[in-house]
Length: 515
Image (cartoon, rainbow, N blue to C red):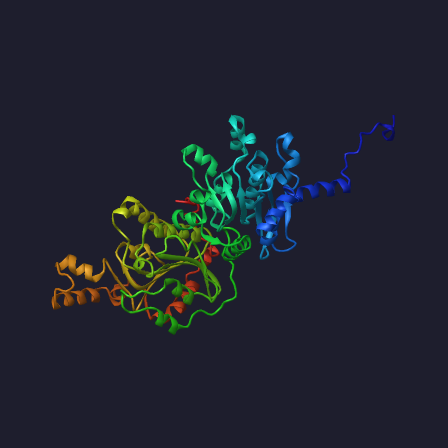
């Protein structure tokens, strides 16, 4: 029998019609009724979110035709509930996973866990960020219930990272289980104001606790923005949340082996505006956020976790086009005294900056750490030491400025003796405690005890002056407030890690993402 005469099996080639039908089924997601309901509510679907995040024409999908490992669910699990692939954000490649709540609640399963693992692994190998657009009902019980299901997940899932590339996430609806893990593991997490996330759903939690709880009580945006500190920004809409991810990524390199991208330089605030903002009297307040805005390039400040730990302001910004991370006291909040949440926020922000080669600017105006019974019960001592260890281990350039007061241990935690360069403004002073407190402790005198107190107070104030610190070369510069931006700009240029390509040692890369 010749080769041409041998029997042939029926052709397995996919026709164009079949291909388009299958693709249409996948892109219909959970069906028109569910998609229409989202449109009516003003909520983007999983694919619209990708379109908002990625540059036009840059998207390539991976796992488009994946389906459930369970035969009976194949027809109703288009893309297996999580759309994955690669796109570009401002011209740079990003790996993206968009959870599709219309498909079995975007519940975690054997197949979509494999998709996520593939995405993370390839992103790490390629040195590109990961973006997670999250809403999820949690675990899919038929898939992972029992020893077999859990064993399968254990073989597939990797829930750790070393910060070799940036991770960002947006929580855009109800989110439980696996989606929550990605939110809290990310370097930047934004949340729509009516979204929720928690370990388990309110239903599961209510049964476990024998107590009814609402989604907002368990994991609403206010809770995470103000109490847990697990959300870095809250927005009103999907569009605003996704735009925030795009903006955040623009400050960071694609991976830890690169320097942050530069942007065109823009002017900062006028020197006289800085001079006018800072009162020379130590007990008068001003808004620390305004100082950050004046020192940074106009329009470049992106607040990080602004509703948590509010006695310190943290933000990404630019100075002469260079990305910097700013940590600044805010005397508007508790006089600038650093409490436990502020300390923790600073630690996690320091870890972020060091992991991705972002120089750190510290602006100190603080009477010290907020102490007392509540602070001690919350373990503030451990927070303080974690904070100073992180700052010490960070190998990016660190520039510190004493704006006015910097007392006690907080002087060290805000860069005193640790920073690559320290400047003290002419309005600044450094001491162990407030001079009035020092007089009371050392001389047993209190305000109102007459001229004796005032004389002793003046002696303490003089010993706190910037000239004393500069005289022993513990401060490297004394500057007028209006000179601060110019000093920071020039020192950032000088302190660049040129021999290492502006890349640090990343000794904080394995620090926990949530403390």
